[in-house]
Length: 164
Image (cartoon, rainbow, N blue to C red; front, side, top):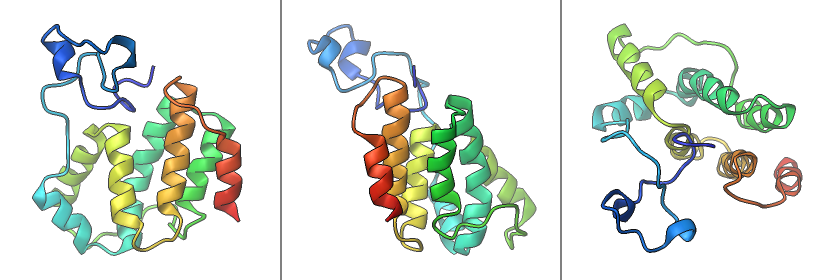
């Protein structure tokens, strides 16, 4: 559960049939695509050139769909809501100054990225503009991993600290 959206990198030793760590291995033992989707230099430059509100309006709907596909509980929605609205990120769509074709290509890339990579991009892209984004994304990741049996930490406690 949680594969491939939340899992770590694939275990190279397991792929060769020689992982000695077994269950305690920190890497994923399930099949992964040969080359996972990621933001290339052009995409990163496009995102950097956008205003934070444009950036968020472009990325947050994609992130929301991925999160809801994994878990649609009220707690998960509340944590995502902290990222989306609690930190000044607008809801709804905005008109971007980027050319339509470039925007479509960027959206296709963002949609093809796994949730973990997309959350990392949100952390890198929006943490400089909004305080608390790093912590909120960490809380969300821990919550989703807890649901999928990958980690354990008191989520409600971290969420309360974040909201203070």
